[in-house]
Image (cartoon, rainbow, N blue to C red):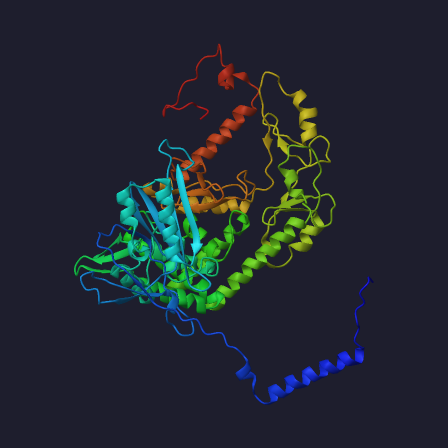
Length: 618
């Protein structure tokens, strides 16, 4: 260990000395001598600064007044944010109290450019920032000179450094530097009576800031003291507030500090408070307190009320309630995305009709809203289950298919012998009788399949226009076509087993007894088939005239189906004459004598016309 040796103390002696020191400390605490022996750090004292006024005109432009920093428990401005200033230089002893706002920004023009001054709320007081930028005279993206003095609490040192940099860089003229040689709080308008009055108003009167040509939605949120994320469900309140028209005689303009002011043209009073501010603030507060069902009920009532108001304003151009506009609104209220969930379109139409009926009969019930929400969830669950199920082809689709094939019973799977138009399914004789013995099904009338005239096995789907025989697809195209005259271009008729005799009789009776007005002829449109090529994203609506059209919520396109340009009602005599004419034309088509066909009447004498001027066969 080297030439020198260290003396080591015994362990017992060290422990004894430690115990003596601990005992002395306990005795001192017991005698309450801690206060006398402890040195306290004095509480720092904040001295209220005095802003000096310079005898020169004010050129500052306030961009944002900011806000007053207040202690939540006390409700007062902290001392470090206070100062005193002279409103009038002629009275140097008349000092007024002032407040340094946080979020304040202003600019001062110097030599065709601007120097900006900002404030923010710091940890122990206000913090300041100075920015000066001179853009490239050639229009480049990079500035020719830029000075950014970042956040600091010492405003005097910050401003002195800014003036030194501007003087050393020779960016400004001597007159500009002399103008800037002043207290920054006075130079940029913080120590200005107008700014202090505006800050006092911000504590009691709401203020709508507008940094663009029109206030954006976030600025309207801030005007109502709301948050765009926390109050996202109540965005419709803020949007309605932003879109509402000012009542007479109020007008609005953009004032100093990008604050929207409202002017009463009759009394010439100017205020920051919107005439409808209290109404929408109470509406927002009510929505926050209400339940989800009550909130939805309120929005639906507002939609129906706005529809009634628009109808009274302009009746001629008002669209029906079940239109894309109000379907979108109700879908948004129920949180349904029609682009991603197009299958909900029919459900929303039903809701609109039901809510409209309840609205006219009295008041909407909250329980009805709950049931609607349950229906929406059930529809989503049904759609999810349907997507997971495997697609099963409908056996009845084979009736319309040009491909050959046998038809089978939907119930037992055996060969079918009939088709029920009301049920839309194929059945054998036993299954049809067992399922159609009771109730309304007992009134169903089936269309029995006709066996092929050649094979006597497959159901006939085609009827020959030459021999009037019924054949299946294979027998007609493979055998029967070879027996037909080659000089005749004959097309077979498709046998429609899906046609209902009851429906045809009902249509004929309705057409015989209904009278179509001339002005209503253009209001008819052809309905889309059940399996339309438009797809599920196209939803059917009716316009003002009752003409059907289809709307796509994804592409926001609309289209119409073909419609009849002229609809003429037929009387009984005209229908009988048309039926007789069809029978005669049918006999002419079936006749093999060429003299009865106009195309094969060459070399024959023209028959004499009757007394009525018609052909004798007609």
